[in-house]
Length: 553
Image (cartoon, rainbow, N blue to C red):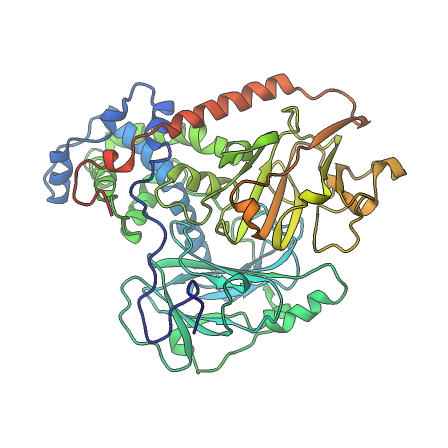
């Protein structure tokens, strides 16, 4: 029998519902986010009269005026950005002829996946924050076309996770060593599937949306030979349509994957809708993604916007202007890690609901913008840092130190890593040196007291003893950068907030000795945080949706 949180037995096609849709959560700032970009709009004006919404559903309605259309457009742009991102990924993958690699990352046609065979390289620019601790895979599924067989080989004692997510980027199944998932062939089905799993299927998991994605992460250490030892299992990580299932697990030599053209163009990152494509993509999103409990009034309002622009083309330009303002003033700042998630001491931030966003729309958009496809809280704990202990922007010309006391090393039951990313959230290119270290590295040197000090700075810094062991150094790019701490299978102290990362101190005696411009940066951070804290004072979703019977679960 599978563990309680893994997958249901093959004879039971139902699966636990997605953790999304907690209708009682706050609307994560969308209404007041709109107020930032359309200052003249009041929160109360964002909801058209209830009679108008009812008329939309019966095809009798009055057109929106320009002010209301702008307000709804700004709200819809922020709300739909992550869903549009997944939509754009799916559209790009429809051009892929066969599983392979593009831009250094795995790509495959719909209803299949592809695997890398080594850690991601600095040449990867198509996705944010690639991890150097795991072998990645990726695939997207159109479950209306066909259910998909997903193979889980026997990984032995190796740490592994498969992230299965819906178009909202919420996880809907538990696959991994932390769940005790058994090896086997599993069936991934869509929300309307009512078939019977064939013999040989170990379990059935149901996506709440037609389109879903799978991102396997297979750990390997820096120990010589461990990557090669992982490859036989990696070669059995496959996904394919149900009608190809023979009852037995298949294999593929992923080391022979084809290199395909860059899907996004010269390493450009996939983005959600642009202000110019926003309305077209929004229409697809509303059709493809069913509303969560409580979201029917929201869907009706967005359809009213689309219908009004269709019947009054003069509204298109002001709607696109409102979307552009929302992109500039709300979505773009969410790329900075200091604006993502929950603030912690020493200027770190963290997530508490990654992969389980529900109706926390602002955090969902922030993660999609800065670092999409994160694991759930209990699987991976993420900590982000843009600023040193004094509030100055991390700068690659300077040198920094972070010390984990012996009694306070990162509390991970699986493994942990600390990684440097440049100002585009990519691994530094041509910076020399290493950009990630962690518990997988046997060469890391602990102090006599058992503490761990990591030195972060230019790769051309001197190697005198005062610089610290070379194995404990991380190289930085020339410009600003961020630090990213991952705890795979975090311990309770990380999950409940008892443990937080230590401060990162700038060493003015080494590297560029000019003091950082903390004043200007402090104003920027204060302004950003104040804006987003203000967004959090939003209406509760049941108030937002009104007294409709659909407003609560």
